[in-house]
Length: 282
Image (tube, rainbow, N blue to C red; front, top):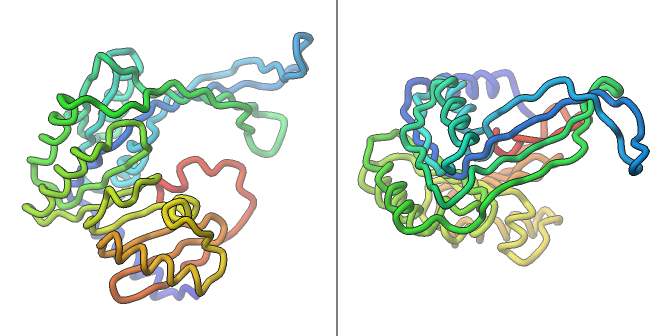
């Protein structure tokens, strides 16, 4: 059970993050939202017709934790890949507007900027309802030249490096090796939010994934508490990381370190209408 002193200690830790220079490297997305008000059912098909009211562009993918770090007062630089297109220009503009250094964003003419378009109905229920999402992206790994350019981003001094792997081709084995080598030289905290391929991040200070991703790696469910502790403790040892965090949705999260295992329950559980960004926040 969380006490008042626990909360105060956490707030003090968060306050101490301000001023630290952090590099976030990963797959960057442009989230394009189209909002409309329901009008009627289409005569052409059994679908809702919306009257468009507004559009909004937001940063997504690896840029989401960069925004969170900036909100905590960190000096944030971002490294990633966009295409030679209008969406890529918008990504850079949005990073600048949030005082995040976009100098590490590389333009690759052979790729297109990842855009996730969401169509949202609002005004008729308590919460806006996402109807459909259309993704435009390239998942192929970046080529060697782009990989080399990304590796150069680790030459600057950072207190921490956060790798955000959405498995869209930016976080290659070569990029990971460069991050690991740079952290070993500088002593920077090296962390990753991974959607799989956990073995690639062996030796990182902190590895984070969700339960389904951990189960895919382990090849076994993590439903039973005793088996879960044993399996995740073994996984942390195999990854040789200082800490492993596994989010478990409404059941909270599990934390494994070299000396301890604990499970943190979800706080203030309530009805959730959109989980977008939950993993990035963790």
